[in-house]
Each structure stands twice: as structure tokens, then as C-alpha cells.
Image 1 (tube, rainbow, N blue to C red):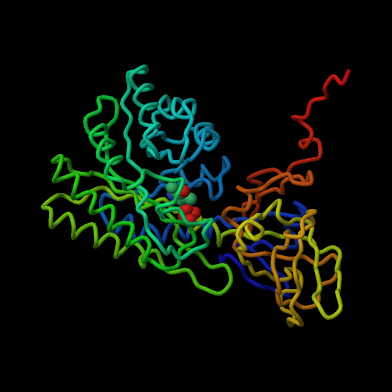
Image 2: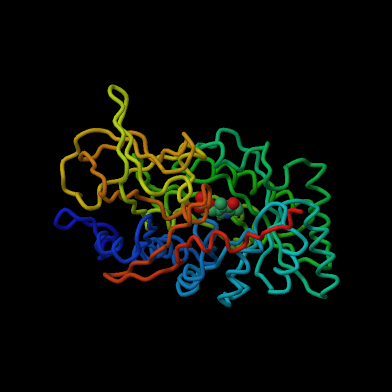
Length: 432
Ligand SMILES: *Cc1c(COP(=O)(O)O)cnc(C)c1O
């Protein structure tokens, strides 16, 4: 069952008609194809997990997470990369195997770390030295040992993605900087600590990368460090985590296959460890976007159409930056089509506007479409990652439901909010 196909002028997702979906669930609506997610994971299995021994994949939950997504990841046998108490809580609520959880993020709180250590997560990826203090104190108190990696800021320049999606440059809030004065002490402490088991290094250069150069450069830095640690401390680094960031298709550029990133990275690791005469380490990756982005799309109902003569025509839809902040946040580009008139000739470019009170709430600039009419259905493609997970209630718009489709069947993964939900946590106060 293909992710998308067009039958009788109508868009079908994983075997379900877009018209049926909006009739059953309304608009705006996030739609996720289970088949498409499984296919991407299958690709990763062929080109990474099955191809190279001693490898793991931890899905970066922040791209899209809810209970049902945790179920899918569990069923597929992958690990989960979480970055907050809330993400960890969601995994715990589904009894996700703790040993398959990696805990990332800058500024993890004492409470979040306690939660992770109590649950027994597989790895804690330490982002700064204060964090090691907290972990050691907690482990001592709880008489436990945490399995940790250091996230290193590899100090790469010229990362080929939007600067809001870059993380691996020297001036970054993420990771431990490569300063000799900081790193030396950090390594000594981790290696000698009674409370942590030090596995190795993590780096994550950025997101939506279509070129493998930054990953390769980052790994080069990490491998130099591996060698230094071996020479100085006689300590073999047992695990390297390459992060995520593998790009996907939005508008023009096709997504490169996983192998384009992973084969040269694996070769580089193999070669360095061979030269050192050491056994190759465990290698972990944390793909988020690349597993879910293209599996998702958003359906909107077309509303007001405003033609500004000689300038442009705004086509407003019933969602916008509340369900997809990416265009407003970092000029992310999307494409789309009229789901109910999918075979009609495109007539002109139209600008798709959201309904929020912000001039920046534009979902797509200049999308070629057949002339839209009020009531048409617009599908915006590749919204499976960082759409729902970044949703907000700005303008008190309720968040849209998320529906999972699989081979002609659909079911709700996340219910949409009601107006009642919007005021649920509000409290009246005593004004006098
Ligand atoms: C965001 C993030 C990921 C996932 O990034 P994608 O671009 O969605 O693959 C993985 N690891 C870390 C540490 C991250 O911050």
C-alpha cells in the first residue's frame, strides 16, 4: 500500500481517502502512515542494523511522540531517545523497556535525572559537567550506577542547514566544548568514577542535513578524541553515538538513502579502530525526522480567499503555525496539493496562510494549485516530524488530532483538543 496515491481526483493515504478521513475526524488533521514508517525503519534495518554488527537505533522521540508511537517503536525493536521528563514519562507509561532508552538534552533537572536513574534507562548522555555532579550524587544516594556518554560539541563550522537546526558548531548550547582545560578533567572524572560507567562519546551536528560532510567532520573530531583517551588513559571507548539529523524530502531535494551517511561513517570508525588495534565500538544513531517526516501529512479545509490584485492571492486554511511552526520558526518549505481535486491542472501560484494573528503565519509561499475554492481540502506534505510535537495553543486554537492509517484502516493516535480542554487548567482568582 503506497503512502500516497491519487484515485478519481482524490488523494489517498495508505489506502484511505482523504475525504473519508476529514469526514471522520475533521480538519485540521494530522495523518500518519504506519506503512511508511515501517518502510523507513525497514530501510534502516537493511542498511545499518543488519549490515553492521553492534549497532543500535534510538528513535528521537522529539520528532513525534505519543503513546501509540512508543508502541510502534517498541514493536519495531528500536530504542528511544528522550530529552525531557515528559518524554520519559510517556515511555514509562507504556512500559517501554528502560534499557532501550537514551536520555539526551541540555540542562536535565535533578528530578528528571532521578526519574531516569530510578527507571534504569540504558544511557544518560551528559551534556555538561554540572550534570555529572547531579548523576553522581543521585547514584550514590540510590546505590546505583548510571551508564553514561559525554556529548561533545565538535566545533564544526559551515554546517549545511538552517542555523536554528545547527548544533555542532563551537558556539552552541549543546555538548561539552573541546577545550583541553575542560575536557581533560571531565574525562578523568568519568573514567575513575564509582558511580558512572563511562561508555564513550555522542555528537549531533544538526538536523535536516542532505550532505554527509558535517557528520564526517564531526566523527573525525570524535575519533581524534577516542585516540587521545586511549593514549592518555589506556581507556578504550566502547560506544560512539552519531546522533541524528539525516535529511528528508520537503520540496526540491530528494532524501539521500541512509547508506549515504552511514557507510562512510562506519568505514571511518572501522579504520581508526583497526589502526589502534582495538575492537570496533558499539555505534548508535538517533534518527527522528528521517523516520516520520515523510510518513505524515496535514489536511486543512480552505476558507477565506483574498486576492490582492497585482500582488498575490492568499488562501487561508483552518490551521497554521499552531500545528506547524516550522515555516514561521525557520522558513521551512513545504509543498502540497488539493486533496479533493488532486488531478486538476495547476493554474497559478497561491500563498497558503494560517489563521493565526501573525503576519508570519504563512505555511507555503507560492504553491502551484488549481484555483482553490472555499471548502476545498489542502494537504501539506511531509509534516510527520516536528509538526504535532511543536504544536501550540496560540490564539487558543485547540490542537488537531493525529490519525494513524495503515492499509486502508484508520485510528486515532492522539485525540484533538476541545474548547473545554483549553480551559481545563485555568483557575479563577480572588480579585478583591
Ligand atoms: C534532534 C536530535 C536528534 C534527531 O534529529 P533529527 O534531525 O530529527 O534526526 C537526535 N539526537 C539529538 C541529540 C537531537 O537533539
